[in-house]
Each structure stands twice: as structure tokens, then as C-alpha cells.
Length: 102
Image (cartoon, rainbow, N blue to C red; front, side, top):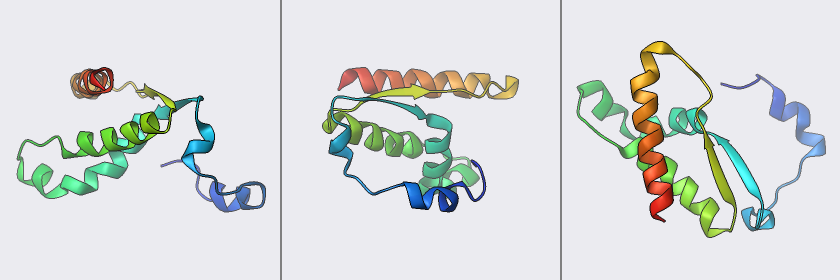
């Protein structure tokens, strides 16, 4: 996902910073990227057809980390694919419920 070779290309103009340096800011998050990365935590359950929300739980850990560092997350579900509409809706609802419960 993303643009191949982009990060190495930008290496000279980037620097490492702690998340708390963004305290008081707002961050828009492409949640599909996070879901894509976190699905590896429960790939066995998915392959075996076992119901799981571990990948959502992992996304929420990252969301909670932002909130703990006073960064307001905006979770964005940008892609619109007809066959994923039902799944997308359930992801969005669960993440919204978890984020507002904090």
C-alpha cells in the first residue's frame, strides 16, 4: 500500500519525533491502512473463519495512544467498494463507539 519508494525518497527532509510533540493537534488516519497492518495479528482466525475483532482492537490501541498524547484522531474510511460496504459500516460503527466511549 502507498507509494513505493516514497519514504526513502523523503529521508533527507524527515526527522524522528515523539508523538507528544503533536499534543493539541488533530490527526486524520486512513483506517484501511491500520486495518491492513493489524490483520496479521489474527490471520489464523480469519483463515479458519473464526469470528474475531483482534484487528480492530489493535487499531484502537493506536487510537488510544493518540488520545493519551492529546492528539485528536479522525478516523477516515476513504475507499468505497460495493462488496465491502457492509464490513465498512460495521468497522466504522465499532470504532466510533470505542472512540466515543473513551
